[in-house]
Image (cartoon, rainbow, N blue to C red; front, side, top):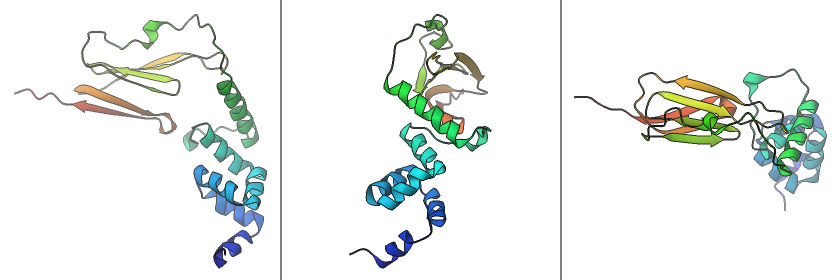
Length: 179
């Protein structure tokens, strides 16, 4: 027998119930879809909820700092195209992307740290330079680009961690103490 309050929740008007669902994360929304057909119908008809789920399914996060003027409908369409291209990969020839573009900044065999997050490769060497390379894709419409970040007072970099959704890089390092 269902809890009496759960029936009251489901009996809320669609617009109020939709706003309540907006406060959930995508993972919980997916659970709700499996449990209740009314909630599934609401999610299917509300573009904001569909966008939230599509971002989650594509392992992406909405970054409010980069609000673009395009509508949610066009964003959903772009996500669907992206997902289609990812699910049916094709090899493509890339002329301008060379091994030198993804090589570590200094190749002196000292303390290299690197990471890959999505289409971004980051390398750091014992020195204080971190090189970021965005891999190109004609199919996805992505140009190759490279950026260098000079760290101030950097010790030996042990590990790099990227979170592109927050434009965040975490650098774990050891400090060399001179006596």
